[in-house]
Length: 233
Ligand SMILES: Cc1cc2nc3c(=O)[nH]c(=O)nc-3n(C[C@H](O)[C@H](O)[C@H](O)COP(=O)(O)O)c2cc1C
Image 1 (cartoon, rainbow, N blue to C red):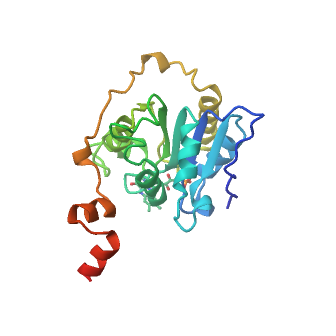
Image 2: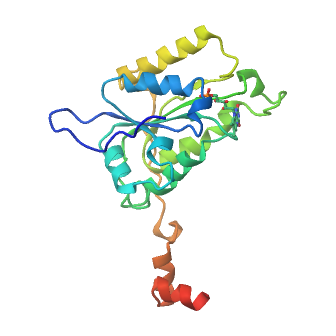
């Protein structure tokens, strides 16, 4: 729906402080996130990437993404909650861009000290996220995967901005939510609660626990990846 923003740096302008990843698999069906996306595009200093338009084939340009992320102070993940989590292309972005020894691990310091902010919408109203209701858990129970992803990269997890019951929210509630979102982007990092948010503890994944890739497997077997595949076939 929206054209991808070219990955270019204008040396006359300061680098954007905020990198916003907007992920919606079906923008045409979106009521809320597409209004948030349009509003974010108007805020100076925000580098907006509409993931599903940038990578319709799911072929993420990892070096370009790492460059855009490395120059920002704040990473924003903006999406509808789907199956208590993020849309699949947003998850693939995390899998590929947050690489070992770049984003985490003993050498992985690229994101150390940056901030991480989730701006999400849910179909379920707030009261549905309750032990006595159909979502059975308070919504906080679904946040640790986000929070710990930030922690592993040495990023501070800022209080998420959530709009529950997105489909049943009134026009006034939606407008107020968009205003809050824009205000947060425009005033970052001068948020009232910022001084009270603890810096992230350092969480280092040792080499032994890193995800192995084909080259590691091949080296362990004393073969190249190609011969390993040929032998296995
Ligand atoms: C595949 C799929 C899974 C969904 N999973 C959830 C869910 O786990 N919890 C929830 O509250 N809403 C869920 N929803 C509803 C969306 O979160 C909701 O429609 C969206 O936040 C509304 O924002 P939009 O108008 O920008 O699309 C799901 C919707 C889809 C299409």
